[in-house]
Amino acid sequence: MKIDEQEKDILDSVERGEWKTVSDAEKEVKRYKEYAKATFRKDKRVNIRISEKDLVSIQKRAVAEGIPYQTLISSVLHKFVSGRLKDLP
Image 1 (tube, one colour):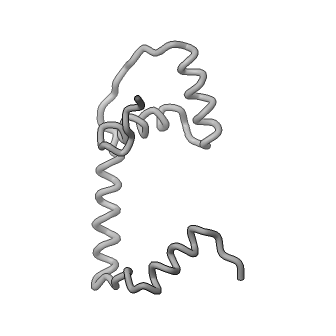
Image 2 (image 1 turned 180 degrees about the vertical axis):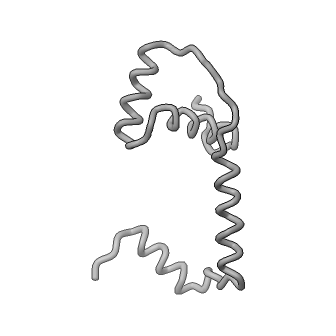
């Protein structure tokens, strides 16, 4: 069976013993589901003005990603404020 580079990295990691068994996996899954819900809870509405050109570009990118453009905008903002999306030089 042929595996790709990412699968090879995971397999190597397992073979090096870097993975640990979770004692209560069901509890951990529930906990992380709650984190995900809280992270993506949309409870505030914001109106912004952007150029038509930027909006069209965002909409095209959202179509390519297969998600609504509002979701793409929200995701980019979330990644930026959480430090996972860095300001470009």
